[in-house]
Image 1 (spheres, rainbow, N blue to C red):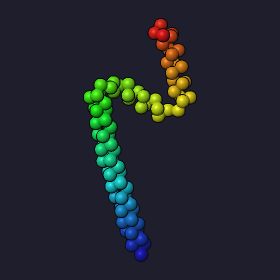
Image 2 (image 1 turned 90 degrees about the horizontal axis):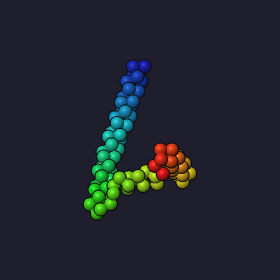
Image 3 (image 1 turned 60 degrees about the horizontal axis):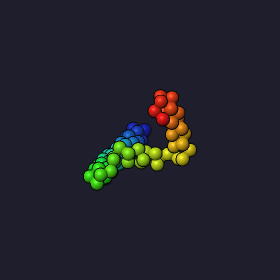
Image 4 (image 1 turned 90 degrees about the vertical axis):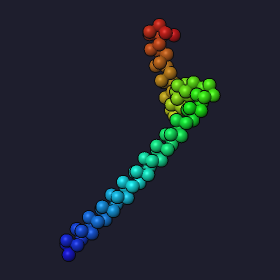
Length: 86
């Protein structure tokens, strides 16, 4: 009886593991597809004359809240001034 319970538990665990791995594999494929789509949009932007480096910076900045952006910009301004770049 104990062997049957152990075997059933192992079967259930193996099934759960397989399900988790398959979900991760599907999500990884979706992530690759989305990554490719983003790359295409940047290519389109470059093709129409936009500076993709600047666009990437704007996208990165928009992910931050205003206070975090202001702090980052203040530190950057301070460092630039210290180096005579401002």
